[in-house]
Length: 119
Image (tube, rainbow, N blue to C red; front, side, top):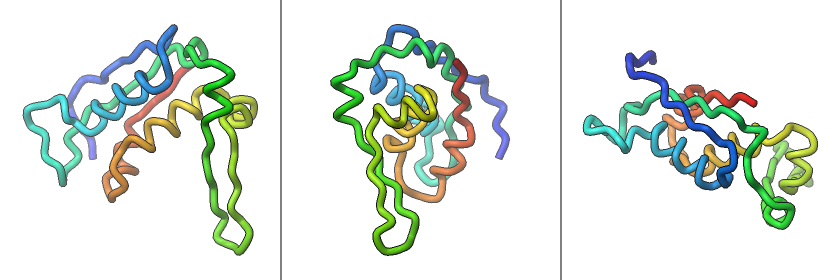
């Protein structure tokens, strides 16, 4: 579903992870628009720039945990924020934080497709 709305650009340099992710989630949801409808994607595409300059402390990375489940018994993996940063970088942390702030419904995948993150 293509929209004619302009791309919202968020500069992440020197900002906290949660602040950037919440601003991206609000724009992806479309809650900052007058034409907001809960059951139709009415958000705008979001581009996060300077993701490598994000401000996040080591203590906060130790607090963050993500779970992944492979579907088989015993396949639940718990990954810390430090591991995620080391393997995939800060871009993945922004993507996961934004994804967790969006509603868990059929529109979530469409909203996440409209999120672009650059270093």
